[in-house]
Length: 216
Ligand SMILES: C[S@@+](CC[C@H](N)C(=O)[O-])C[C@H]1O[C@@H](n2cnc3c(N)ncnc32)[C@H](O)[C@@H]1O
Image 1 (spheres, helix red, strand yellow):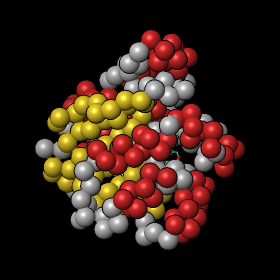
Image 2: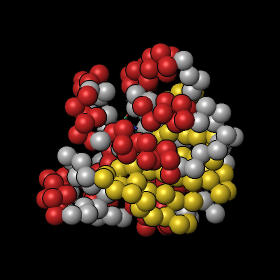
Image 3: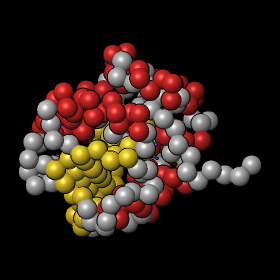
């Protein structure tokens, strides 16, 4: 079989499920507001920061960032035009000034050093190893020196219950590096420094980790 280098998985694995992405149950299962608030706190965003949310989906995190940091210049990017329509409605309803772009994480449509912070939530487990590497290299390229990546995604199980849950998901090609705890090492290989896990949460689908990495 010919490998598909640009393999793309929509928000809930199937485009017909996309309209249900903001369902309350999903938010409950993933402890969404808890981990997203924590991610925003850890991101150290400043008034003048240029912030990119990669795989912004319906823009829940993007909107939270703009509400907490109204002076920051916030952009959301996603590969799916349908989910971007949902994001746009939410942003208009919230009366916020947030730019939305359609694009792929592994071919970011921005010049070098365009952002001071890159955030991304629940996107890396959609990417093959090859596309994780391409995406990390792209993030490194578009961050300014001293800029930081703050990522939330499934991580290495941190207790017996989370380990048991991981047995269901660890065979999936896209979740392997997450569950084996390889992401910080992959950030370092791309040139990032101080790459580390900064927090972790128990969820119905396994350990959810927050990571930080800094471009020298
Ligand atoms: C599970 S959703 C997470 C959405 C949002 N970040 C959140 O935390 O609610 C994953 C999102 O990543 C997007 N996505 C997946 N692969 C992508 C890629 N390679 N480039 C850009 N967006 C991608 C999907 O379209 C989807 O909106």
